[in-house]
Each structure stands twice: as structure tokens, then as C-alpha cells.
Amino acid sequence: MQVLSLILSVFLWISVPELEGTPDANIGPVVSALESGSSSDLARFFDSSISMNVNGQQGEYSKNQAEIVLRDFFKKHPSRGFALVFQNENPGSLSTYVGEYSSSQGKFQVFIKVSQNASDFRIYSLDFVKS
Image 1 (spheres, rainbow, N blue to C red):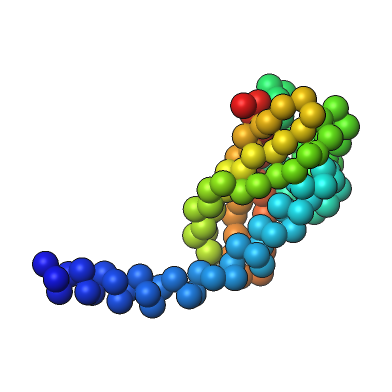
Image 2: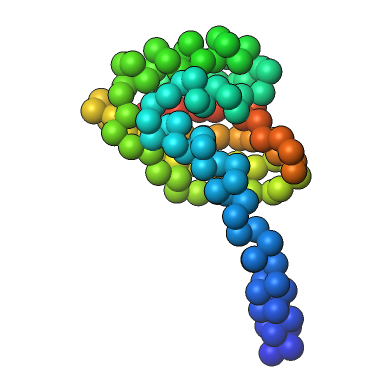
């Protein structure tokens, strides 16, 4: 049993440093865009089409349509901050992030799903759900 614990500990110790830096390299600008309520900065990371649910308005949108929907949302709900509360990163695959967007009208849970590889980071699903 102790050998298994030791092997697991060594594996985790060796694996963790490889993932460090990945969140900042990819999700950092997305977090900044959400903190500032900038639909144009956020749209830079959208896939060519994106599935969105923004406070009950849901559908499949082109990159440009999604930016317009978000611009309207940010205008009605100006940002008072954004914080990541969960991240499940799988570099070279699909990753999920959950955050909390604060505005004067309340808080929203934000669910971000991305596809990523070494050279590309694209949001394919984004949901804002009132808390």
C-alpha cells in the first residue's frame, strides 16, 4: 500500500509542473475580457460558430452574431468582476472552465468550453446563467 502511495505521489509530482503556465497562456486573456466586459476582446477567441446561452437567449451563433449578443449583455449587465472557480484543462483536447461574473444586477455562473492544441485556443460553447 505504501509503495502504491509513493508511486502515485511521484507521478503527481512529476506531472504537475507540465501543466503550470497553461491556464495563463490560454485562458488569461479570456478572463481579462470577461472582467472588463469586452465583447470584442472575448470574440477573438470564438470558434467560427459558437453555442451560447446568455441569460436565457440561447442558440448557435456565428462569431460576429455572438459578439453582438454579448455586447448587448455587457451593456445591460456591466462587469463588476469575474473569477474562475473551476478549470478542467486537457491540453491538445477539450477543456472546461467555470467562473462567476458579477454585475450590479446580480451574479452569473459562466461555463466556457474550449478546444485547444499547442497553437490554437477556441471557445465553442459559452453560457451565462443567473445565480
